[in-house]
Length: 203
Length: 203
DNA sequence: TAACGTATGTACCGAATGGTACATACTGCA
DNA sequence: TGCAGTATGTACCATTCGGTACATACGTTA
Image (cartoon, rainbow over all chains, first blue to last red; front, side, top):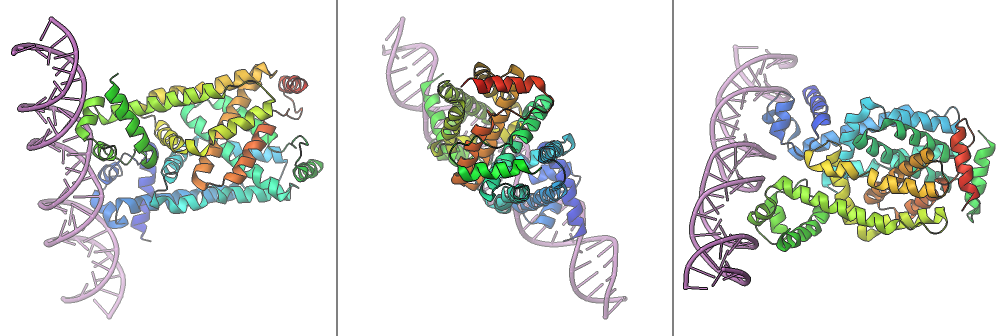
């Protein structure tokens, strides 16, 4: 709403990306962004409502990040590689830390994470699945692969955040991009394998 | 050390697995496990040292869980499927929530997560990589695939914890097991592709 | 019995918490 | 000019925080 509120929220985001929010009181946050806890209460009402505002920001940021990434051109493996490079960019790390901190509260189903939980998987998996369908995958298998690709990417980022071992994780990210578009061995699931064969024919 | 302390820690673990610990004071934890905050301080010294004890427990639990899982028999894809079934078992979910809550603090490098950070990836990735080497993978590529498999599994569990969509995630887990042992297309990396071919010959 | 280490309860401490009351600026609009 | 809405500072509130002091049980062991 208010421009002052938005500016204040901007500063809070920047500050919290360095320190997290779980252990910080509104007074500490206020001090960190150069205002008084009185102002945070004034603009957001409650500590929890401040968290809600932050969650909405992160959610919106994720959505625009996703919109940027949907570039359906080029080889599918190369699209995957670019996807990894973009989401693992070091400049995104602070925001990503915040993302996973919120995630850790979402798995306990804290009420202020409701909107986060509603979109954290679907908002990414569905466009990804649609991209795979456009490239010839069977819809059911496309959903599986999108879900796996998303989960794997997030797991790799989690690894990167804690170990910082960029080199092997870049290699693992590239490997993921290659494996994810490969057909499975024809072990039963006929629909799946014909779908991946269709995918192979294209490209 | 003390048996009373261990029993108290047991009760704390059980209680925290339902509620998390980030938002709880030692007084609330004490009330939750039927003692006084005075006793928690007595046995653990400090709130932070209580967290350290919890982290050590989770770490030890992970280690024994891993030891249980190293069953180098059978088809590699099938080993992967069993791996997923075991780590995604619903009865493990509370402990896994706690694991990811600690993880979210570890990415901010909180001091009491030191031992967690030191082992959270390597303790799993290295045995996994060794298993792949035994099955004929080139050591360098085995490390990549182990790292990817671990990250993907954790990403899938994170998805499962927040969406609860067991069916598609089981499918995605099986898909991961199949893709992870497939050779990559021969696109440059000669060492890698020969290694995976060696792996294919075996089984 | 006496002494001692482990365990536990009661009561307290100063500091910090989230939130509120109230006064007061500054702004544009009537 | 005066009034209304937004914004901000100061001061305060009851509550809770992590941690401590001190007394006191309960075995064991000497």
